[in-house]
Length: 212
Image 1 (cartoon, rainbow, N blue to C red):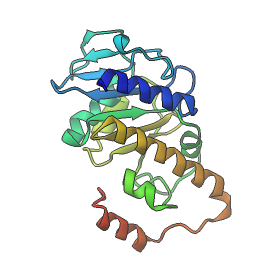
Image 2: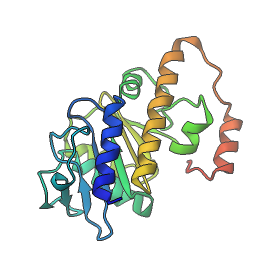
Image 3: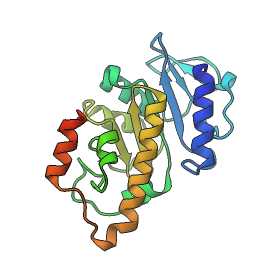
């Protein structure tokens, strides 16, 4: 399948399951020539058209297609700091992850509670960043400040940003982040039995997970 069609197909899947509503969220893929294929500004993930997708240079200059999302800087930041580990970026406004970001946390560096193995295996340590106005280039600067150490980032009061080598992997990891956030939100007041530090370390070693 052509990468443009694949991006539209994944966008529709994410939209149909309510992981980004209305015209929220944006996706991008790094093309073989180094340019970025990005969803256009104001577009719904449920109504993407291959010919309308934006192609921008790594610095953000539009080459073809509609005007790109205002969130291009956060995509650029992950590509520039993650290198070959970032072939695609998914930014959603998913409900439970965003809801969990509104609540107090005692660990911004490893924000997502370790309730199941899969959050660790697919996401590593999720870093929580403070609130920024959507589209603010400072979001990109804050992500660059993480020096590529996190594949998954949570923007407080806004939504998750996940990078992976392929678009498929980035979408699946984003879905895992939302599912894990839902578990954490629903069980937060119940003092759930989370994985122990030793169990988390075992997963990190066995599956070669990026971990500080």
